[in-house]
Image (cartoon, rainbow, N blue to C red; front, side):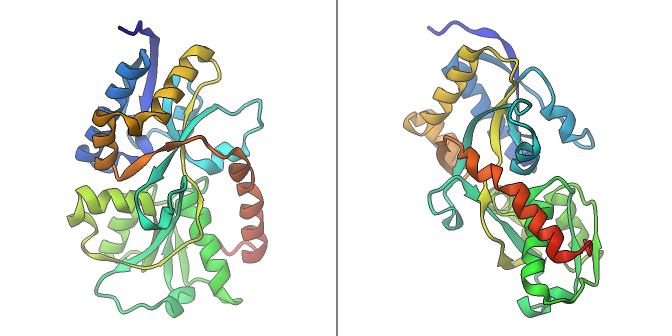
Length: 272
């Protein structure tokens, strides 16, 4: 029997898209706690609590963090990267990457050629999937044109869906993995939407632990997550979350995100 260490927190806030989906993450965290011997307290850190507050907590044990804010921290200030998920979706190609889907109302006859003139919604400015990814996509198609309007912050994928359904925006970007989870478990929520295009890939949001955590705890959590696909129980949970497993994060890929963001800023010239 494994001896439990003192408590740390686990949180899947970035992908807590519904009570059903949150429950699946909780199931994974309970398995992780049992397998690693680390006593994990699962917390929701629900909106409108800022994600920045979550990511600065000294008791993080396994917490989802967006790659863009992670990339902007100095190496000595970053939390410890544990693992990055590998989606089962075709767009992942077996790698720990994700993208964003550009979505619109199903009944609207927009084509990709129309996108430079429509009302765009964005989530928060420190989001790769909800801000940088759609801006990068827009910069590549705009050809000097300005978006009719860029509307935000819409906070999260649900905010984008609700804004499209309400007619407040024409198009928005939804994290492709979040969209995958909604397809699996909340198809009614995205039934009014269609995917017009998909952005370039970026490194997947990663699970991190606080630098204050003991190294043996970090090692135990990372080892359990990397081996999760070999456990019949965990493999079933992963499948329910649309994941093949976890991989060690490619830190160099995250380090390239600020340069990508700067190139977007230069191309758009302050239009978003």
